[in-house]
Each structure stands twice: as C-alpha cells, then as structure tokens.
Length: 124
Image (tube, rainbow, N blue to C red; front, side):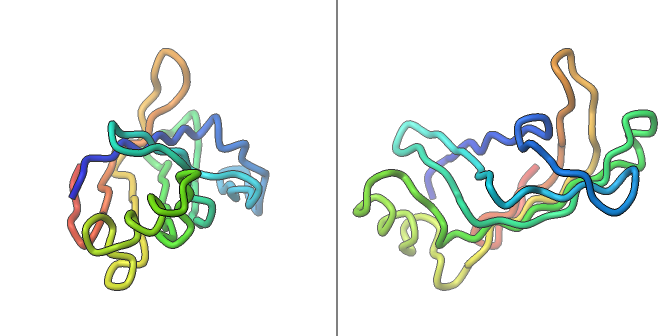
C-alpha cells in the first residue's frame, strides 16, 4: 500500500454548530484533501463526530468515517486504481476510519492525534 498523507484541520472543515456547546456537526459541503507523491485529491463522502471544548481538551474528541468510493483524484483511471485491491481495496475495506486519542493546541490552532485505519490496519 502506498503512503498517503491526509490533511485534516478542525479549523478548515468549516464546522457548523450542533446540539450542544461542545458537539459539532461536519457540514456535508466539505471534503477531505490528501496528497502523496503518486496522487492527490479529495474524499467527498465522510461522516463523523467532533466534540470540542477549548477549555478542556481532555474531554474533546474526533471520530471520522471516510467512504473510499468517494475518492476523486481528477483522473478516472487513477480513481479506479485507488479503489482497487492494489491501493485501498474498497470492495473489502469500504471505509477509512480515524479516531482521536487526544486533541492538542498548536501555535496555529488545534491538532487531532489518533489512530488512522486503512485496509484494516490501524496506525498512529
């Protein structure tokens, strides 16, 4: 499997306010961008939950479920290849999952640290 960097920022998702002061809903008008030396593009279909409290980061969390079939590299052949068993194997592993283990404050905002699961393999 090729290495792919997925860039995700709580600030750039343009979150919309939800039920409580701490729970946020991700607007369905946004996507998740990725880049690697082999391909770049976006995943257009994902869902998740973000619970964020700037004053108590220990109680904050993020959980995302990204639909592999929604990949768009801008190249139909590349999209098909990315969904194949050589890359993401969308037939056997239809989702990429991310679950935070902590949220950290940075100089420019906040960073979610956690486990990313691709093709059934979880890595920090």
